[in-house]
Length: 180
Image 1 (cartoon, helix red, strand yellow):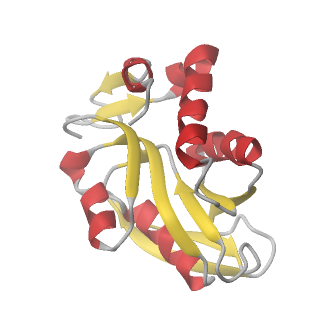
Image 2 (cartoon, helix red, strand yellow):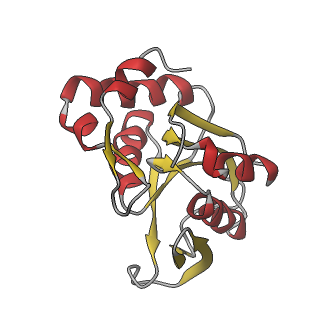
């Protein structure tokens, strides 16, 4: 559990009925704009992961990049961007998945990891779990090990964190919000 959990949670803005009626959008931009809370967020991850002998952070496009880059830097790890299909210029592996309102595909370069690398998969939020699960499958395709999946926010009512646990992945989120 993060020492700063309440402060981090309180810095997240809730926007009602966006992008459509009934959705309570959890906006991390105020958190990122507050230099003190942003530092506490990254420090929380550093303290959690500094002793786990990780090799890389696989950061999911695009808000996962914001978290993964400073964390990888602080821990002396490589940063591997998990990109939307068509954004990487070299040989890739791809994984398609279902979204709440359609489907998408993400990809990794085939040389992103060495076999046996210990990887943290990171994004800003876990909702239905599709993106995070697809990223974990890409890591596994490259014969690396997913040590844990991490996010700022978990929306447990949408079932994504449970879906990840059911697939055998350890899940960590700084805070939770009820509802959608």
